[in-house]
Length: 188
Image 1 (cartoon, helix red, strand yellow):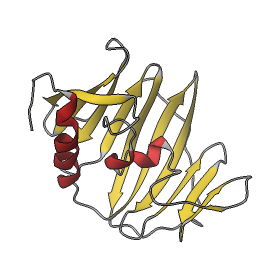
Image 2 (image 1 turned 30 degrees about the vertical axis):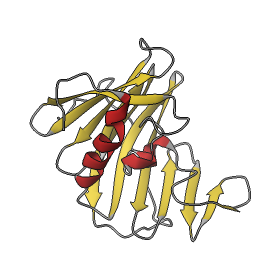
Image 3 (image 1 turned 90 degrees about the horizontal axis):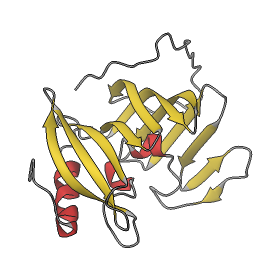
């Protein structure tokens, strides 16, 4: 991995391969919070990449899932979709190759810098292909290969809890506790 060096667009595919190689899981459950367009919500997301299935629920009652090749986004009827299409960003963070930020084909962003931060994390800065001043960042856990924080403009998503090896349980009762702080302390 080329650290602390401005990357060329041609470095994108090899960097993505190195990020995917960090993965240590096949299934996981995460809790997190997203700030999107001035509002925020909590979520629980589950992914089983081996089975190509995922679920996500927000504290606002929104539900998304993909099971047996069928994408369900309430209130719309389910429809066929290939994995990983249809994933919200929160789920894509658990499967980084699903993010549309790696400079492939018509993607608008590509990774231009990777740095070590904290004890175990990698900070990737993405640059827009048409506007080098338009940037986004992702913090990847260097031991698990998942993105724990994603920021683009004022939209920020942070994972607050991560469990590995958990079976998918879309019917599980969830409890979302009130957010008691305006700043979630990073754990890099």
